[in-house]
Every structure is written in C-alpha cells, then in structure tokens.
Length: 415
Ligand code: GLY
Image (cartoon, rainbow, N blue to C red; front, side, top):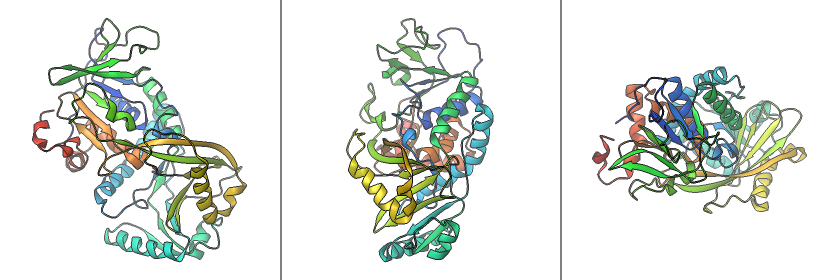
C-alpha cells in the first residue's frame, strides 16, 4: 500500500486553516519532504526548535550516497531502497540547487573500498563474490591499481573494490539549501518543540507545541489555534530522527521502535583535496571511511555506539578513527582538525526505515533511517508526497511501511 499524497489546497487559506502537511523534525528527512511537498503546491509547515542545527544527525553525517559499497549480507531490501534513492539524487540535487541558489558539492565519482591486512583482503573477496551475485557493478582492483586511482593510499593497502556508481554530497550544504528553498516556497518554519500530538478520536489532527514554543514573531503560526499552542494539519509526519520514539500522545503500538546509535566523526582541513573519491576501508576488521569535499575538507567517520542519547565526543572514538584512517592514508595526520562531532542515528530493529502511514489516520512516519538518512532523503520525500512511480513506489513503500511491526497490519490500510 503506497503512502497517499495529500491533494493540493488553495494557496491563500483563511486563518486557522489546517496545513496540508506538517513535518515534526527539521533534519534532512523532514526538510526534504517539506520541500518536495511545497513544490507540489501543498501548504506545508515544519516544527523544530532549531531546524538543520547541530542536534540533527545530518549535521554529523558524512553524506556518502553509497548503497553498493555499504551493502551488507542479508540486507538486500535496504540495498533496493538505497539504489532507488541514489537514482533520484542527480535530479534532486539539480532541482535543489536551482531552487535554493546553493551549491551542494554533489559528486558521483564512486567509492573505493580497500583492504589493509590479509584478513581484510579475504573479507573483501567474499564481499566481491556477494556483490557479483547481486549483479552490482563493482570492479576488483589490486593494491597497485588502487594507488593509481588514489595516490595517497598507503603501500600496505592490498586490494580494493571500486563501486563507480556511488556518489556523495555535503549534508550541511544540503540542509542549508533546503532551508533556503523552503523560504522561497513559502513553507512555515515553526521554531518550537512539539510537546505532543492532537487527536480527534483515532485521528491525528496536528500537534501541541511546548509552552515556550510559537511562531518567529511570537504570534500564532498559520494553521494554529487561537491560543497559539496548537498547529493543525490534515497530515502530520513524525520525522524526529532518534527522538521519534519519545513522542507524547501516541499509543505504545504506534510509537516508532527507533533507538539512538551514536556516531563520532572528524572533519580535517587541507588546502587541496587529498582524495579524488570516497575511500572506505577495513583495518583488521575495523571500518573507517574518508569522504573528500571540493574545498579540501576530509571527513573521517564513524563510530557506531549503542550508548543511548550520549553525544560526548571521546578521546577513544577519535583515536579509533585516526588510527585506522592513518593506516590507509598516512597523510591524514598532517591535516588540521576543523571539527569533531557526535550525532545520533535513528536505528530500527531490522535496519530499514519507517516511512508511510501508521494505524492512526492523519499520522505518518519518516524516521529510522539509521546510517542512510542522507542517501534515502529523496526516496523518502517521494514516497511521502506520492512522487514515487506506482509500480516502484508500491514495492518500496511496502518494504519500509511502519505497519510491518504490527501483528495485524491490515488495520492501518485506511490510514
Ligand atoms: N552512513 C555512514 C554512517 O552512518 O556512518
């Protein structure tokens, strides 16, 4: 069952008219869905105390659009979603750049996956066989061939796999561009925390803002009630990342089963880019990736830690990243440290996102994107706004339907 698109409504509604679509959460997912919906002529609002801020996972994300090189055994459904979203990225990036006037540093030169030790090489060969079985376009390279592509790689690198179709983008540029595009499209940003959902019987009719929340000018946001604390919408989408599981007013069976998965990341600065493409590598079983930006920045990531809502940057986390990155690209230790940050990915029990209607009419989810929020943003927005083609959309929507965690999924079919 594909998520239903809300039909467009007139652009000049009377005060208090519900929004067509209200996004709870201003990370890359909420902002992308808001932008695509606004392009379709819907009246849209985004509620977030600080959209695109350092709290969002997208602020820490490296921006790898790498479903092929990040493929994992038994996770073919996630690969399917990732490939479908990767295919949407070129148009998404071009339209966003045009709508916002921002450059996204979107690049599509592929990912090079490299192996350090003989143990890593054996794992790489098994992975290559798995990828060939899935008919993924990858090329097995010797160590020398890897260094020909990336001269800064260490002589110790034994071999690699080139995934030429993978791409990457700067997520901070993407969210800044989305904010600019939303402003141009007349989307309302409500800089407030959502305290809970408004209900009318089973149906979700909007949200209640926290007491200190309101519109930028202190008045009632458009679509709000006279007391200014309620924002009404025909469809509300919970897109609050790792915090989505804590929304008040939801019955336990509707609360999304997301948990925070901490990732620490370092941003290094060099006058010139030292890599031409994304490099992922394993060093005696420990994984690290290096993502180059056009301006010379190099992102090293990322730890994966199950520590609840802990966002401390730790010496041990940074040491692990540097230890492994230095084995693959020794020159990284010469670079200036620009930034260190920890973000919280929204993990789910099956590592698939939760996108689409819930059993409560008027409420959809767009959360649980775990390691793939930036990659999956275009597909998520397309599924939510009805832009995904019927055949493709139905199959993909079924993979990430929130109803899959219900014993009796049929109850949500009219949501
Ligand atoms: N997508 C890479 C990460 O989450 O670390």
